[in-house]
Image (cartoon, rainbow, N blue to C red):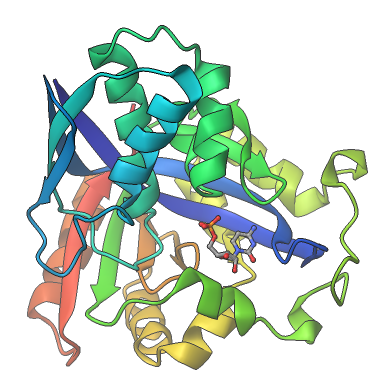
Length: 298
Ligand code: C5P
């Protein structure tokens, strides 16, 4: 069985305070994009993982093996699998590479082992593996709340075109959340976050959801927002430089994705994305960067 696991970008991310369990209550709009890891799975005895990226552990701490074990434990299934993970999504880049692999493992093994779990049961397991994992069972666009694990799928009114720019240095999600200043944390302090479902959306949230539903890149570009970006910039100086360089090329909008370190340009068309990617690859920026031109998943 071959499973294609897409990356994501966050078009909007707002924090609503730190919870008693240490996580931040948030609202975020995520879109899956056509940059994929591939998982090749075959039924076998035991569980074995091999990985194309030497810098990534293929041991029991890898999210793919954690997802497979969790599925075995929850269902009592005694089948096994050999899994080959081909990594293309950069690590620690705010693109949820590990989370998408975990979701692909749950969905793939559910099929390979003929477990018959429905999407909501898989989403409960996904939430135990990481805050971003459930999103990938829904996609291609969703409004996520709680610590990110409550997913409301959104319609994407049209394809969105992006240029993703990834510095060589990645960022740890926990470190970025840890560096968020109290000034950037509206509810201030542990345990201050209320249950988000009782809150009304702020006007910018309503506006970006409507713009995504209509597929209007220009409007989405003006509404892009990521509360984690100042913390990301504190920990990785390349982020601010890349942001400034992309802004000079006048796409619809520029933003850091998730907890970084990827910065993306949202473009008005495929042609604009091509020309911005070309400018960056051949232009004056001195960083050691990886540049991807991608569109949203359908
Ligand atoms: O859920 P996940 O394992 O991806 O989270 C990694 C880390 O990011 C957490 O341990 C926490 O420090 C931080 N985090 C957070 N609030 C969230 C999501 C993640 O503080 N909503």
